[in-house]
Image (cartoon, rainbow, N blue to C red; front, side, top):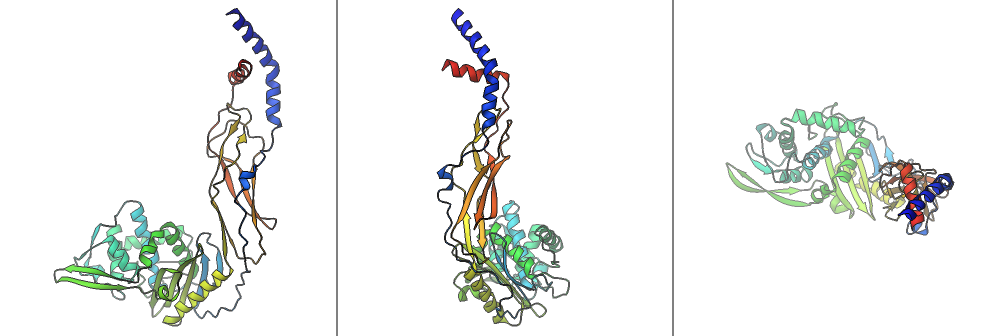
Amino acid sequence: MKKKILLYICVFSLFCTNISSILANEAETETIPVSAEVLEGVQAQNLEIVEVNNTADLGITAVSCILMEASTGKVIYEKNADQALSPASITKIMTLILIFDALKDGKIKLDDEVTTSAYAKSMGGSQVFLEEGEKQTVETLIKCIVVASGNDASVAMAEYICGSEAEFVRQMNERAKGLGMTSTHFEDCCGLTDSTTHLSSARDVALMSRELITKYPEIHQYSTIWMENITHVTAKGTSEFGLANTNKLLKQYQWCNGLKTGSTSLAKYCLSATALKDGIELVAVIMAAPDYKARFSEARTLLDYGYGICKLYQDENMDILPDAIVLGGVKESVSLRYESGFTFLSTDGSDVSNITKQIQINDQIQAPVTEGEVAGKAIYYLEGEEIGSVNLLFKESIKKAGFFDYFKKIMEGYLL
C-alpha cells in the first residue's frame, strides 16, 4: 500500500512538470497528412467538353426556349428564357409537384378515392371525361394528368387536396415563389385559362420541371406510359377509356422520359421535355413554337446539342477520411465525414484530363468539438482551377479536457 502511495506522489510530481510539454507537443500538430486512400478512385474520367455557345445557330423558331441539366441546374442554352408567356398545360407540372408533395407528407395516398365534382366535370379542353360523382384513385388521376393532360382530373385533385381550386392555385403560386420562379403567375391548376395574366417563362418551367424530376423521380413511372386504359364507373354503367400520351417525343427520341406538353391558341405549342442518357438528365423547354411538330423537333435539337457537349463528373465521396487531431480534448482525435457527394457539369470546352480532390483539414482544432460542425473541406480542381468543394464534418463531439483528464492520461502512461 505504501509503495502505491509513493508511486502516485511521484507520478503527480512528474505530471506537474510534463503537462506543459504535452500541451506544447499537441500544439505543434498543424496539418493532418492525407493518406493515399483518400485520393484513391477519385481520378476523373477523360471528359470531352465543348464550350457552350449560346449564339449557336440551332434553328429554334419557338419564341422562347431553355436547356438545363437537372442535377446541377446549370443552363446550357437559352433564348428569351425570361420572357413571360402563356404556359398552357405545362402548368400541370406545378400541379403534379403539389400532388407529390401531399403524397410525401402523408396527406393523401395513391389508393385514396377522389370524387369528381360538377365543377371538375365542367372543364373543357383536354379531358378524360370524368362524370360528376365518379370516383377514381389518386394514382389513376395522376396518370390522367401526366399522360392525357386531363383538365378535369387536375381540378378533381386540386379540390381533393385543398378543398377548392382557388386555394390550390394560391399554393401553386407560393411553391413557385419558393423555387425562384420570378416570371410566373398561375390562375388555374391546368393551364386552361387563356389569358394574358396566367404566365410563366421557359426558365421558370425548367425550374419546376427540375424540382419535379429530381425530388420525385417516380414521376417517370407515369410520364413514360405511352397508352393505358382507365375504367369509368358511373350511374350510366362501366366503360373503358384509353389514355394516349400527348408527348410524342417518347417515340421520337430514345432517351426521352417525360414530361409535359401544352397548347392553346394564345400559348401556341409548348413542351417541357426530359431525357436521360449516360447518367445525364436534361430538361428542354420549348414555348410558343409555331406548330405541333416544331415543339418536338426543336426540343430534340436542344437535347442533342446538350448531350454533344455535356459530361457529368460525380464523386459519391465514399472514401475513408483521416482522423483530425484535437487539441485539449478528452480524446486526441476525431473522425470525419463528408457533408455530401460532389457533382460537376463540364460544358466549357476545356481539354480535361482529370479532376483532382484535395483534402484540407483545419489547423489547430481545439476542444470542445461539436458533431456536425465544419472541420475542413474537400476541394476539387480542374486544370489547376478550383471548381467546387464539399465540407468535411465532425462525426462526433469531443469535450474539453480538464485537470483530472490530463492526470489520468499521465497515470495511464506510467502504469502501462
